[in-house]
Amino acid sequence: MADFEPLLLRRRDADAAVAVAVADLGEDKQDVVEAAKDNKITPPRPRVASLDVFRGLSVFLMMLVDYAGSIFPIIAHSPWNGLHLADFVMPFFLFVAGVSLAIVYKKVPDRIQASWKVVLRALKLFFLGILLQGGYLHGVTSMTYGVDIERLRILGILQRIAIGYLVAALCEIWLPRRRWRKEGFPGNYLCHWFIVLSLVAVYVGLLHGLYVPDWKFISANNGGIYEVKCSVRGDLQPGCNSAGMIDRYILGIQHLYNKPVYRNLKVCNTNSVPSWCLAPFEPEGILSSITAAVSCILGLQSGHILVHFQDHKERLYNWSLLSFSFLALGLLLSLIGIPLNKSLYTISYLLVTSATAGITFCLLYVLVDVCGWRRLTCVLEWMGKHSLSIFILVTSNIAVIMIQGFYWRAPENNIVHWIITHVAHK
Image (cartoon, rainbow, N blue to C red; front, side, top):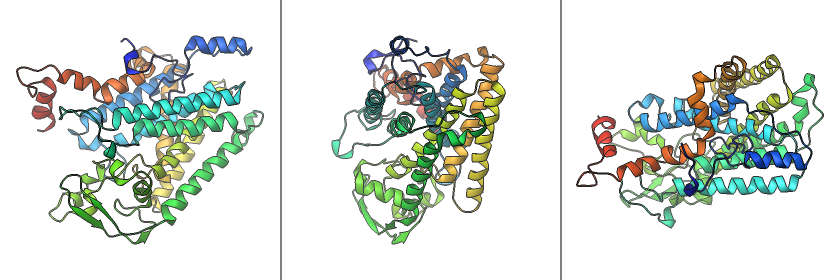
């Protein structure tokens, strides 16, 4: 499959690009090798194939839940609390981005130059996300395009990955680390763990500490004015949580996602629908991006294990220890009342999904890099190496839109419309 320069990005070296989970945003492989020679640094080792496979798996899962979620709701996003297959996709992206960062920034000759490159890559990804998800390109059921600046969606999937990448990359570049000692893995990155705990503390304080007053909004569907009764603090339900309030105040309610998944809740499909069911909500909002960035930093710690341990057993032992510890803590928090919630990116959700990503990566590492069964996963590996091109063309509906352009006599007579009407809506 050819790369797509007209779509803004050339193929990049995915590891040197941090992959930003779905993106190959780094320097060309030749540039990395030349830079290594200039700085007398040993050129990068051969790629860890399981990392490409994991990235490809993440893209495949996104495609699966996007296109099959309407047919099989059990794999689509959970309406609010709980975990479905789709709820693991974003944490997988953030995890693989963090792992890649440890490889890219194992040695940083010039911190300032590296920081500028990180900021520029993050901005590129952020604005690419606005272009793809901001409303400029029409959906599969609409034949219009263009964007209403007053209703431009500011945040989204790529924007969240850009934020997580930026935070984790700057931590890796600037935070001091102790000389590596096998017996003290966590102690070598105390500053990283301090940042993790600080971000978690800020998130918990804002989520549970801010007072949410009553609020009003104008429906984009019917123009009606609705009021949501709140006057609470620490509420974790869709209408009165502080994450939504922060987004409404800072971004503006007109710039939030207009089709929040909580509209699939039973209470939103009754005769007496609560007013908040009609309101926009940003699932990739400002507050939840704090814990999303923590996901990327946790992936970075798994990357440190990959870089510093060379023995397969040592790597797998440390990955397993880290992952199962997170899993146990996350499940414990969910049992004592902190729900698994993707839209709020709660602490329990952060830990459980990060643990799942770590366990999945362990399994792929054994299958691909230890046992050498690359033929079995060659398709996923190829998808991982071309992840951003696939994301742009398929997941963002550009390929579907292009196919829609071919019709018989009338625009509605196209293969996409036929599939939607005869398969998806049955």
